[in-house]
Amino acid sequence: MKLVIDANIPAAERCFGHFGTLIRVPGREINAAHLQDADALIVRSITQVNDKLLAGSAVRFVGTCTIGTDHIDQAALAQRGIAFASAPGCNAEAVVDYVLSSLLTLAERNGWALINRTVGIVGVGNVGSRLQARLDAMGVATLVCDPPRAEKEGRAGFRSLDTLIERCDVLCLHTPLTRDGPYATYQLLNAQRIDELAPGCVLLNAGRGDCVDGLALRSRLAGKGDISAILDVWEEEPDIDAGLRDLAPLATPHIAGHSLDGKLRGTWMIQQALAHHGGQPSDLTFADICPPPALAWLHLQRALPPEDALRLCMRAVYDVRRDHDALQRQTQQHGMRKGFDDCRANYPLRREFATLNVELSGEAVVLEGLLRGAGFSVSSRVEESKH
Image 1 (tube, helix red, strand yellow):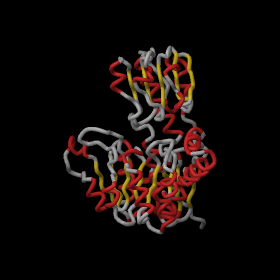
Image 2 (cartoon, one colour):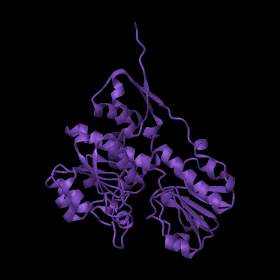
Image 3 (cartoon, one colour):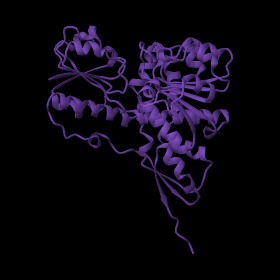
Image 4 (cartoon, one colour):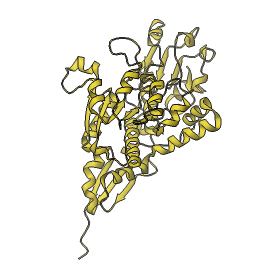
């Protein structure tokens, strides 16, 4: 079997080497010529898999090691009888880590507390549901909007997007990109809705760039300048809007889900799907390919202000400011397209919050519920008396 695989997919040899010959190609460079005699194609989100790419190929299986599938023309695959698999939920925890790191960073800069804000979550799937659960556990008020789920499950607990815009201090977008149908998300936040955002609102988009009218958002940020935007996804990636990049207090190159854990989980899920497709049972487990973290323990001995403690623990694992600075530096030095892709291709090692065990003792024990709610593993140690 010959497999063409995005060069940035980790653990490819360990997961797919036993299937046959691996051809590693940068995701944006994969073309029809690479697939002429290939049996399988394994990609991430930057490769557009469509009828043109597959023309004349022998590919019988396509897998994407990502949650999103809008880069895959599934109708074309079905017409050609090509099996398809994605990795839903593989990096959802990493995206939630990104959201919490970003919101707490912005709160620190601007002098407000996340606990006092109401967070609206648009799209309550793999990512949005986890974000809601963590924020609820942290004591942060949430409202959620997900019309497809509301239609299937009943309206209880779901609100309209307009209600979220009216009542929320923070609006987080975690929707897939759909261009047609009753629940299309293309430019879901259009010029009118962006204009309706209340002064002081924080808009965070870690879903899909085309769900927001970038021109209207740039106009609001450059004009009134009374809202903030945290942007990880963009229209026209990698040729993103430099003006919008400069106006967003946190701007990152589509890396919200780029934890090592999330990437490896996606690789492993597609390995399992390919094994199933080929009728080859696999005993490879996720633990087999996931290394231990470099920082496994952090010990807090005294109580800190709650959000200071959260920031300390989060930044021990992941600091979103690093990715913001990298995007600015790389795109200014190397141009937008190359700089954006270089940030992704050379992304530094990042682990998830759950890989850090926070050990608490003394006064710090009062933080246990908050840190556990945020996603950390937490243990308490009783201090022995010195008398």
